[in-house]
Length: 146
Image (tube, one colour):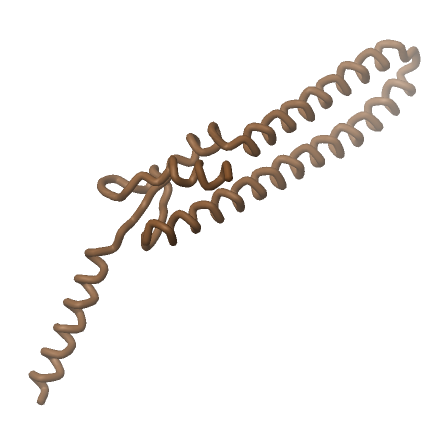
């Protein structure tokens, strides 16, 4: 009886190993996806534009600072500008995080769709896969462009 239970456990274990050995794993090159995904390219342009706006803001503030005459005016201007700059930098960081999360969500949804259609068990980053797997980067890019 004890041997029968042990044999049943061994068979179950071998079946589990056999199933895991047949697992199909895909991988994607996330950088290449971002390069070829129009929404990601647009997000980069928007982020660059906001960065340029911040630089222009600083240039304007520098000109205004040079026009101040008293140390008290300069000190008040510096503290006000520091607060405004911090606020603008935080807004820029939030905008960047929101865009990144939005893009990542769309890439994940496209990857999940490809995973189902290609009957894969998982899709990983190409940086995680050392050997094996199926490159589905182009399929994910196609899915994102639809």
